[in-house]
Structures are given as structure tokens and as C-alpha cells.
Length: 237
Image (tube, rainbow, N blue to C red; front, side):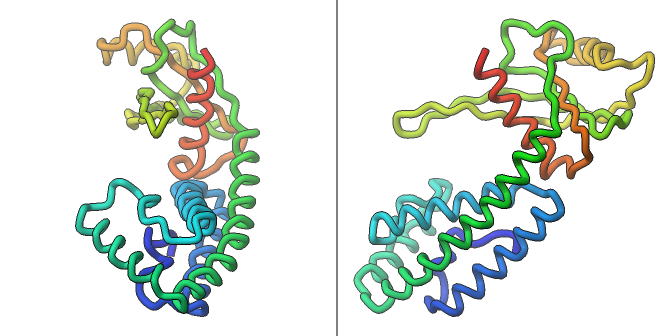
């Protein structure tokens, strides 16, 4: 069980022991993923559920409007009807409060493990530009190399912007392009030049290299951490 349903707290039987079993099974699986140095999507899923529990506890009621806007209208209406029924049942609400009181510290402890793993991975990654960085750096290429191997994974990235409430956020989308084998005649700079010839719509692309001193799972760990690092670098320019 690598993920919990978005409505795990209220779905099915609302019983303290049952929900405790569901939660502990989930956290056990997440812990296994962290032990395998796999961060995503498990860390993001854990953060989502933890924040929702905090909102529910602070509001003293189930906040169905705190769940994802990606829910279909039918799903949302179902959740609303379920929550309206629950908040008017004192006995059920007591069960919910007990479950939340148990779940929050458990999730927080697992989040600390994930945070320690993230910080450790980030310490192993060095991010630097390849060649001269252009003024426009919201689109380009990200090279990833691990443990001094000759394999280079190449991604195309693009910065995206979105607004939530009164805040603006920057995120990054990536598209895997290819793997290359680095050698004397095929340096990072040469790979960048070949990309500009192949993808002419980016004649002077922002290109960055992320080198991990240790080997981690690429898609689950190195790529998402490198992306977050790159977002910070570009946002600070």
C-alpha cells in the first residue's frame, strides 16, 4: 500500500482500530520506500495527507474543500454528503478525532525520515551550468550523471507558473529525451551543441548538469531532487 485514498479517513468503516491498521500498513510501506532511497511520489503523498489532517484538526470539522480540485463533480458531491452526515454524528466525530490524534504524530515521524533522506540526497548532488547561461533560462536541458559513470540522462525542462490564492508558484515539467554515453569526444558541451542542432527551436538553451556522487533511484529520487534544485537556481536569477 504505497498510497492512501484521498478520503481514507472517512471511507468505509470508521473505527479507530481499523483506521489505525490501514495507516500503519501505509506508513510501513512508505518506510520501506525511504529505506530503498525512493522519495517520490511517496513523500509528496505523505505531505498531502499530513496537511489535510492538520486542517481537519484545526477546523474541528471535516473540510471537504481542502481536498484536491481534481476530484470529479460526482466524487466531490459524494464526499460532501458523507462529511455533512459525519459532522452531525458525535460518536463518529469522536472516532475521527481519536484517529487524527494517533495519525498526525505517526505521519510527522515518517515525514522527518523523508526529510532526512531528501537532505542527504541533495548534499550528494552538485548542480552547475553547462556552457554560457542565456538570459532566458525558463526552458532548456537538464543532464543527470551518477557516481562518475559515463551514462548521461538528458531531459528537456520548462518552468511553469501557477497561482493559488494570493501566491504565485513556480514549478518545472521535464520530458525525457535520451541517454548518452560520455567520452573524450562527447563532452557535456558537445552534447549541448548536438541538442541545439537537433532541436532548432532552442538555439541557445539553458543547460544544467546535476552530478550525484552516490547512486540513487533516478526517477524516484535524483530527478525530482535535481528539479527542485534547478527551480531554486532559475528563480533566484
